[in-house]
Length: 125
Image 1 (cartoon, rainbow, N blue to C red):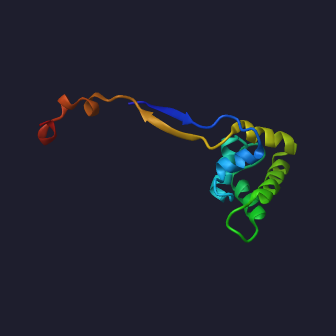
Image 2 (image 1 turned 45 degrees about the vertical axis):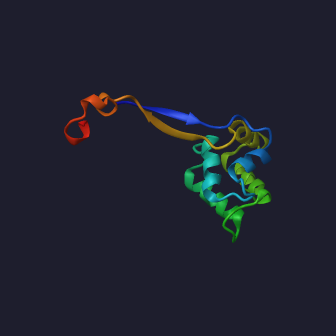
Image 3 (image 1 turned 180 degrees about the horizontal axis):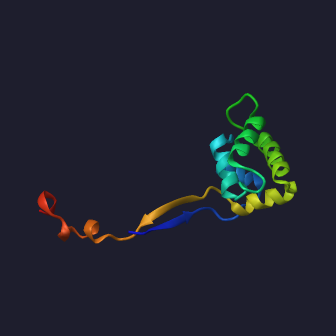
């Protein structure tokens, strides 16, 4: 049986604040959501590897666990330096990517599983 990839996500965002809100609904963003935002914007691989994202986040957060909006902007400035992009171009890419993307698979129909008449033994009753 072949599995089909399904992607669900938000459309482009109107502002960087909107992106921050989508990835940090409580006003603070953790490292997992920061890394997801960078991956969803397809920035990993542009002179930046996944561990670099974690290092940038760790530098921005200081001694805390999460980052606020000010630290978020500082982290994006570091991402712009690392990817050798202008800050405004980076922000536009992130805004175009929008909020979190949910990617999963959806299995195709399987007659032995879906058709109850093919069940045998005690399950066939």
